[in-house]
View (tube, rainbow, N blue to C red):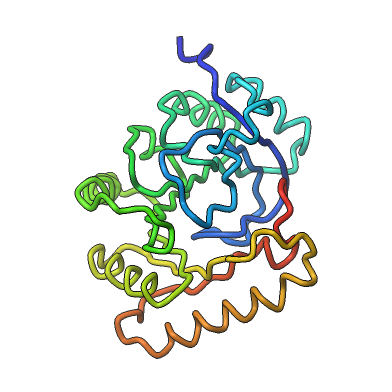
Length: 243
């Protein structure tokens, strides 16, 4: 039965570099699924949930997705990132993940920590990215506690990451870091300029935001064991999709 269950896919692209999280800079392929249980105010992939790309959704089997990945990259990849939206809404991803592993591919995933799936423990590079106040969303701490505890219990390779736009977001990041002490932790400068289509005009803005976050983090004794990241792909391609 698992073999015929389909996955709602909006984009398959790569190889490219991972622009976020614990494996930033990693050569990877991307599979972007449709659907999200959040509606973040600054979401850079709102087309996955706002209905604007509903005609682009393809219901694909694991085999069809892997065939598409191979068609794009041949044998020039060994890592696949499942993104969204929120892929954690899809229990049927278990078979796809197993098939990728059988093909010798490692699998990464990012989710906000609002849903648990048993297949989380099979992810090679897992990023839990709870959303700060600027998103307009509220964190279910009890649920997030449970997810983090299960990943720790299973010895999963995972991290926590918070996107920071302002001082309130940074305070939230410190709360997350303190609550889950010992879990590898990242802060990432937010991109509040989603309408600009020219990468060269984006870069000065992104650099300024990154420098702002670095300065605040370096001065804060509550953020010592922290990695400070840019959103790397936007430095190169701006807000372009499919890269």
